Length: 499
Image (cartoon, rainbow, N blue to C red; front, side, top):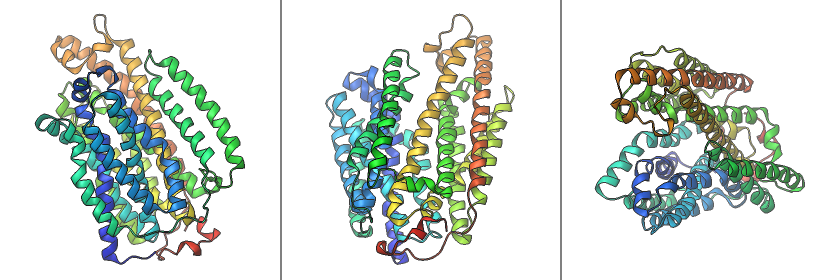
């Protein structure tokens, strides 16, 4: 379907608004967690406010992607936005933690649909050459949410109360919904009308078990449950293989995994999740402990990373849309990311704070140069009837990589710090405030411990980006086509090849 330039701009504004709402709810709640859990009398279970949202947003990606291919992305998008708004309203009225977690699960499901269908709709109404520019604009939602989310959440909680963290979505969401009704075109469903219900159920259950296993494995009290979930995930994978081999239209079509371009992009998506997202989660702790800064100052390093990512994301999208050539940017980005993380590993203890800020900004620039670009490339290599499935798979690989990478980094840091702490300090109760109140000798010792613990972490993540260089080099060259999108019934097998 071909839209006028003005209609496309209105569509991008609508998709950006709802994508920002979904991305913001990943970050805005973080500064309100303790207040929410304390008011509801369940501090020991407050992590589930975040886990429930993230879990739903991850495991439903393939199901929603396939559903978008079957019934059309507009329907899934509007239903997801409706669910998100209803769940936001329910979150604010939650009388207890169980209610809040259940509402957050529904909210996460809606968020997954918004993110995924925004990318799919853009792919359906633009040419491959136009796509990088629009994907870059929509992709700004997540880095901006990382920067402003915690600040906005804290201000709302302090001045209005934590319920408004959720209720603030309603007026913005309703305006976006009205705009989406007008702007989002009616796109037909896919060429494969059958939906793989058994595969969807088993896949979702397997992924839930896998994510819970990764999330809980670092907690001594939850380790038996984590091992049980890991065993369930193995059984689920075996069952899924058996089911999908017989399915007429499997939830993850094998045909999309036989394409070199798609496989290379999936590898690059994994690098973004396991590399950047894993390290950004722990960099503030590293800066606070190794550089003995306040929490506010420690946020400057991830902000520098995100700003670098934001600038390079927009610039790359614009450049690729002009030339159509894309292969250079993933190669450049992974090389720069690997070099930056290797530099972080080699930094001496006591280096000025501006040094890690500059280095991590370079890592952000490298990562941003291919973070959203790979969606445009992977969509150009898929059949139009598989756009939802291939977009969902790319997002899913990134989310799983983030969960696994974050769990591994957290485990390594926790074990390394606990093993090296001097007598009299307990890793379970060690906070930046405790360290700042200690003697200068203890502060120096803790700073060295955190520096020495994170050095191999940065080195390991540099190796992850080095693997990304291989994926980038395996990416076939060529140019993205500037041909207008064809109607669905004109799709042929040739569209499954890279363009």
